[in-house]
Image (cartoon, rainbow, N blue to C red):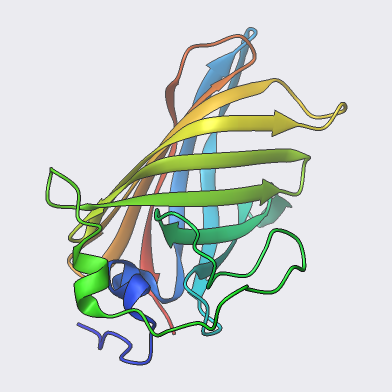
Length: 199
């Protein structure tokens, strides 16, 4: 059991259960191009906020084999509710808002609830290996389902074209599963983990 933060902007209330640092282990199991990738990994995930209408996200993982650990890809990004930008929002780039910002209320957020009773969300992630992902999905209570809307790769990045992710809060643990389409394969199971909140 943990306390939900009370200092979040209203837009982050549906995602508030994610805030904190989570650590644990997971299992990697993927086969492509005649090679099997398998093993156990350690994983650390952080969700934080700086007063904006989004959560900051960072994650790192290390493959474990006996006493040896091998760094896997790290990623960072932003999680937010989907809503149209207004003149009170800054951007694009460094352009300031054209109108003064007004605090959004619980009623403003409730107006964003979708037909399934959840909230549509957008997740932008950048991987250290040159992959950029835009996920669209929804948060419904303590469960999040995401699918890539776009994957952009640097010229030297490995073949990776799509993914889905699922996150859930179960018995005070963050459980997640990540399915990918890489090396010419269709989207299929790739990794999953169970993390405990450590901060």
